[in-house]
Length: 168
Image (tube, rainbow, N blue to C red):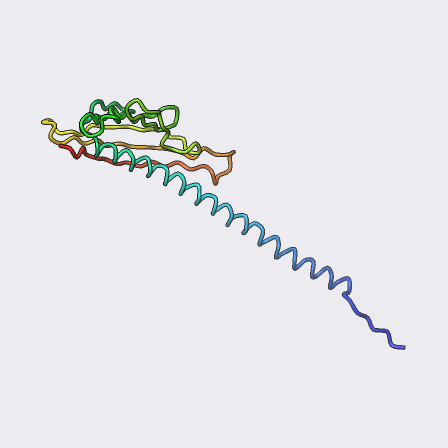
């Protein structure tokens, strides 16, 4: 009788295990790096979108105001007494890491999501001496509130913008 040997030898088995181990040990770190890059990109986009939204909302409010009442380093008080009396005054300010807006006697609303901490909001009045041109420049800086010390969540950014009251 002839015996047929089927299956793997011990050396073949060790060789296959080593090859699979090498492939897996190179692919897993690469996969984690790709996933981490995706998370970092999403974090950057969320921060960027939040800062851009705040900037556009401030521009909108300045452009549609009737006048500028008070400009301080971290708050802006706009006059809407002619066009929208229910929105008079409109106050935009930085309060405890949040950019807030209050229109008239309405509620104080946060403009940034809870994951975004606004570190600075500065307003500068660049109006002309004769008050024919009422122009405000602002800078907003923020950072993503991380869920630990992972580098993917450590993002900070700032944006600068300006707007002019249209009613002049």
